Length: 469
Ligand code: AMP
Image (cartoon, rainbow, N blue to C red; front, side, top):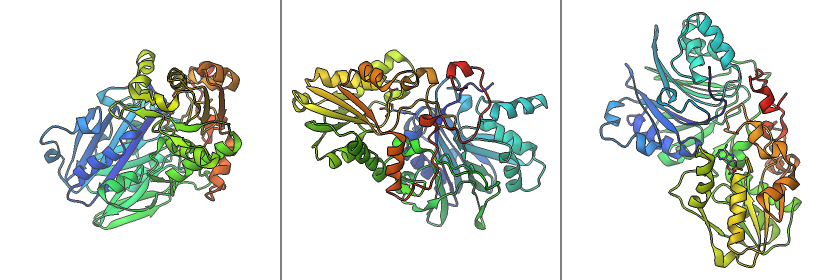
């Protein structure tokens, strides 16, 4: 039984560089924001695959002497991962590596398969023994059972059976394969460094290793790299819609990254501008909830003509409060992470900009903190619509009953977070902002806001709890 629905991850891969594992380490370091719970690297020396995986941050898992000597060879893939309910143990660390009749293969996955349980049930009935509770392992079993002789065809055979979101990097002894699902939910870019091909969830990983950004891998595209160079295939039925995840632009990706062929920062800033056009307020200053609200707050300030101030200072030595598993710790966490600049705020009317409200816990704490620092009025502006539906494609959103806007009106949420006013950028506003970049024709997945899921998923045991059907 899979014990989780929501998983956030980052993937990296490099083929044809003498320092493959070291560069993968750096790439994962740049992608750390995509997952902080576990990480791993699998490297190939052309003869065999070797792995090092562990729970924790990249800098901790790879801190001991001699690890990179045990990961020799010119190619490597890596993974950072965070998942919510259960499954937080070693066995679910990625890349998943197996030996089977045709050699060894490893895979790193960002996304979430919606029919993995169904496929796993069938595979188990016919004798497969799973060693993880991760949906990704299904892909490996399907590859091992595929009939085709060529690896590329076996991977295609496997992926044609899975549905949902996947940006994948595979590594065998002699090849690297990178694939994006036909909907292109999650980003995956292609780059080059000293003649070696590199793939990464976000281009910020290329910047760190000084690789050249080439382009986004297309939805439904498969890139195969071996000693003869790179080949691109489109093996899937291309009738699928291209539905990249809008939340990557709102929150998840780093603002200095290029994803879906576009830099995140200006898009995020434009969300803030749009928010200011639609929901202006008479106030003395605009402040951001750092770091996630920063670009949108700057956009809001620019558009409204209000001064932008650093009213909240972040302690950078604390992880994201959202990832703390217990409610009690999460409450405390906001205080650990943020502190108001009281002399700046006292007696002032403050606009506070953040990217999203999920459970409402963070906003409530922040508003109270700013109020205690002496603010006269607090107007909260959120640069995305109310998050009312869980994601089944690889963003960690809690179940519907925990999403405050699934069961409360904006007036009720305003009272709960104790703000003087609260406004969300609505879907039309988001799309209007994207249109400024010529992206209005792209059919972004906005299921977390609209409940319109582009790829259907099987009914879950806790249907009623989720309140989706
Ligand atoms: P909450 O207290 O649940 O309302 O948390 C909202 C905060 O979590 C916002 O400041 C967001 O920046 C952040 N956030 C939203 N979605 C996610 C996510 N999927 N993973 C981690 N943090 C998130």
